[in-house]
Length: 184
Image 1: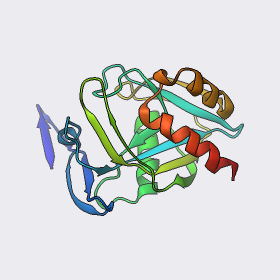
Image 2: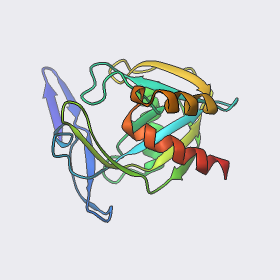
Image 3: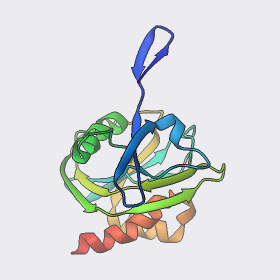
Image 4: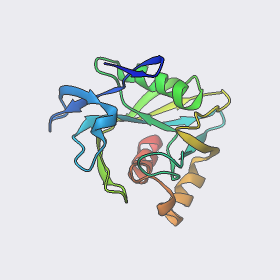
């Protein structure tokens, strides 16, 4: 679908809708999906590490529809219908952070969460969690990210344990699971 905004035409972002067994059942415009009755849909989260082993965390832009201004994983996104998940992760790393990511690894392939923001908007996602490596300089899209920081994984775990309210609900669930998976 194409959206016309004045003199500009822009392709509308579609998300993949899922049934209860996580099988695709169609697609819908992203802007229409995140509501107080959000259907289950496909997403992903990614944690980017540098060569020193530090992880990149980002603070969501303050004008985001859900969880504005909270700290979270490096970036999230939605694969387009028919798009390979690894390609979607690479694409989104560039769009959101200006980063070229490599060494992609799907670490938590069955992660699913549901959370309700203070404004009533529901996140309802089957959201495999990936890790990646990047050596580039972060150049965040201001509509997505207002701050970013590299920090040692252990520091992220400690800060999240002491001040969980600063972080997105999905990252609070993912970080302990990732800690266990990364130790293996």
